[in-house]
Amino acid sequence: MTVTATPVAALPATTAISLRGVSKAFGRSGDAVVALDNITLDVARGEFVCLVGASGCGKSTSLNLIAGLDRPTVGEVAVQGRTALMFQEAALFPWLTVRDNVALPLRLAGKGKAERHRRAEDLLEQVHLGGQGGRRPHELSGGMRQRAALARALAQDAEILLMDEPFGALDAMTRDLLHDELEQVWSSTGLTIVFVTHNVREAARLSDRIVLLTSLPGKVADEFPVAIARPRRIDSPEVMGLAAAVTDRLRAEVRRHGD
Amino acid sequence: MTTEVHTEGLEEQKLAEEIAGLDALEAHLESHPTRARQIWSMTWPKLAAIVLALGVWQAVVWSGWKDDYVLPGPDRVLPVLWDLLATGDFWKAVSITMRRAMTGYLVALMIGSVIGLAVARIRLLRSAVGSLITGLQTMPSIAWFPLAILLFGLTERAIMFVVVLGAAPSIANGLIGGVDHVPPLMVRAGRMIGAKGIGLYRHVILPAALPTYVGGLKQGWAFAWRSLMAGELLVIVANRPSIGDQLQLAREFSRPQVMLALMIVILVIGIVVDTVFGRADVTIRRRWGLIDHAT
Image 1: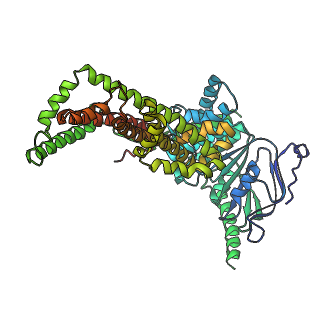
Image 2: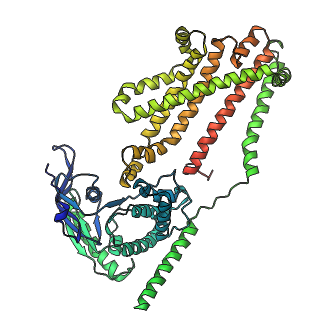
Image 3: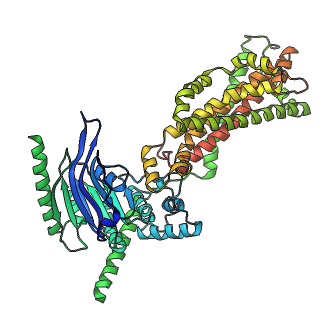
């Protein structure tokens, strides 16, 4: 089990994340499940990358490795900057108001009350939840909760945002609006975003680059740079065309599994 | 250049409007009953139950199952209760009983919470002591009295001993259960936003454990009250009249009306305190959104 951490200084300033020959196995050597197999991937600063694949392709595992919640079995994971992680469920704390939820990372970082509240209100405005700060999480709809979770993630002042199928549980209309909102937030903050999804159209709509992963074990099957001009529409011919191409490739991979 | 910025601004405004519209559509439309209606809907079932209970009691007395001087009906007992409420001795007894209840419960709360937190956090302690606590919880408090009297004699301390032993395990288990049932996603989210160690406990785990803990507090009170009543009947401490003591005297002097009146008092006190806990529990659950308004 070799884990060598690349000294962060060795990463060029324009690279935010670097995975080199990363493999991750769970369990004992006999019946170990190999989630990731020899992944090499670079993400540039400010880039929006989507990891796409079917179930079992190690998308969530990759995020955990980048976030530092787990260590790779083999290989190096180098990350330049703080990371914030968003899940499919908003995971807001029901005993706090929305504003206090968003302010909590600031509180844990030792910021004073006035500053926390001011910043939390700013962030809520940014995700179009201005004025909703006094409500409780259960009073919000699913889409609003995810926006609040996004505000909380932004409150962590991270340079890198990791998102694990955050819109998977939402209806299509809410998802569309959240795509627009996320794109807006991304362009105004210049964050690096790694977005995991099994929704190919979503990936084509949002990302600068789509990385397609196979399943069991997870390997990089293909990469698709996305050169479509922004702001995009999910139903534009370019986005639909790219989505079709990626879907075909994904289906081919899934078919191979059945053999 | 300015047209680009202008279009961008328009796009942003349009998005903000669309989102606001969607939010408004998805806002919960709850009909809040008026305060008066709420209070009435809470009280009338209780009043009806009281009237029904009195009716059944009177019916049993009229049936002649027991002689009137053994089992008097509400027509005899309620006036006696009314008179009791006017006597100073009665209130002195109530105050002594309530003071014992409060003290014993608070001590149980402190001991139970400390032990609960220690067991929840320290794995070794949990495997050593965890099932012992649950065992203590199931033990009838009255079984402790012989030991208590042996250790402390017929004193206040004997009563306190049993009250604490009765209530503390429930409180400890309430805290342990609460900590155990914190959803792992909450803990993960807490860690992600920078909560570690004590901070994680203070900001995530303990708040998340609160509803179950309050459940433990409520159960602890029930056990404390029961243990106390048993204690007051078994351990007569000189010069300290209490409700249990008065109950015993009423039996000794063959005054069943007083006995039944005191039992009503005991019942009412138990219900009132239980209601306080109930309100606390409902308030927490409503704030957390655990109450389904669709019923």
